[in-house]
Length: 122
Ligand code: AMP
Image 1 (cartoon, rainbow, N blue to C red):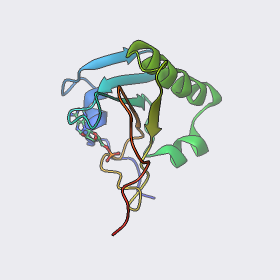
Image 2: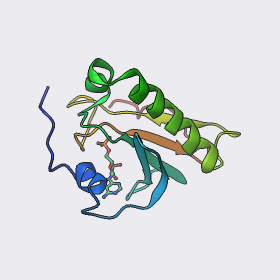
Image 3: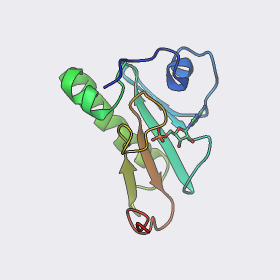
Image 4: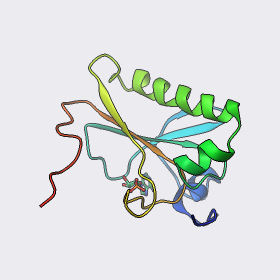
């Protein structure tokens, strides 16, 4: 697995070098609306620590960071009004997961029926 790249776009958002449309923040996490939403509600939840992906996070983050990340996902669902109707959470990992930004992020998607989990393979 690649080492953490401090120039990735989410690291720049965390440092305040580029703006985001914030949904939620606490000491351990930042959540902001995806710039190219794929659902009526599409928020990205990220830890403030330097973690490339979910596997790296689970292997190296503290119990507090892991609990805080889970709590932030729940808070975002509550704040955006999708917790009653249901929603989907996705975290892409590595090449086969089609992860574009190498800082752990959970996609929180909702606001309508999400359809099949994956596109059918040709
Ligand atoms: P992934 O393919 O799982 O790495 O997802 C990366 C996500 O980050 C995509 O859904 C992008 O639309 C989103 N994204 C990229 N740049 C920004 C940005 N500056 N602000 C908000 N979302 C972004």
